[in-house]
Length: 415
Ligand code: HEM
Image 1 (tube, rainbow, N blue to C red):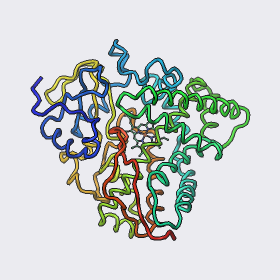
Image 2: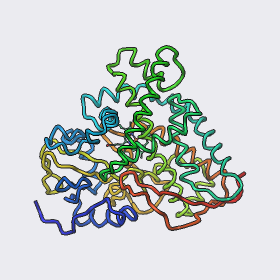
Image 3: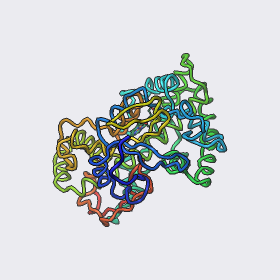
């Protein structure tokens, strides 16, 4: 192993979270396959990969996977400690934490029901939700984009798709947030955070159990019915797995989409030429959303475990090592993207890895794209003279699901 020329990086500290791209550039240039500090203090370290080519290679290689127990016998790397039984069981049934063959089985069922047709049908619903949220911010000329718009939108959309009754949605928001806090952070969550997640999990379990039973006998036009129907038709999925999948869909698409809408708006406001172009050509929104995902990726990092020794960039990654793939850095790699630090909403050749790649490629990417395209166009269309009220952004303490805590915006009265 060659000796690193830079200090060991801890990507979970506030300095990195506030300005990740400065750190990424430094490590991409000086030590792109870097043995840094791990989020879990019981691990001696973790690899971090900063270059597009390396990140893509690992994402697409079967020599790396999600189930730590296959290569470690110290119990480290499990997504949730055993004490939190409900939460642990549910998370263990999330496809994102599974390798084939379980991953293949879990994913194929959801793939079947999460169809392009379903996404097309949901577009008018997304539009109505976005519109009604902006109706509520009303005439005071100010809003917190995160709390008033970006946060409620995705949870309302997925709750509608699942078939959750509208009056139960606030409860869903609360539970989803508790799970998100515990499962999204790569810092080891505190016992309080886990306890809240455990409680929320049981809330979800009780809720979905009833709904699943109901849908078996009284089918409706919703995602839960589709999952239950696929199950009835012989797909090998237990009730427990269907239930965990419902919770997974709800949480996986939550923080991610919030951050895309809020950081996307922030990037546009900080790049007035791009904003002006998009306002006058709303049909550019498809490419604009891709560029916003590349430019400031909502998911900055995903993690893998090495299932075999693997050499990359003259470093030897050993079987059992943890590897952090810095998507946010890969998407700014000048070896892959022309002028990577420039926001160019008309960028051609934009095959970013903001939704990952390989077998875990984001299952909700079509929905996320639709939500962001509609949300941003409605926002720009409805709120003239949109502006940042405070240029100093306070970031949530999370480098994985990276986004602002709040985003205070001013605008002229809505039309
Ligand atoms: C997986 C990003 C929205 C459901 C992933 C992965 C990324 C990602 C990077 C790969 C994780 C890995 O390789 O370890 C995003 C971003 C989103 C978004 C940036 C929004 C801007 C959504 C939505 C849903 C969703 C709306 C569903 C409602 C999933 C699921 C997986 C996944 C189920 C796991 C797929 C698998 O393991 O096969 N997402 N996501 N995502 N995403 Fe998303």
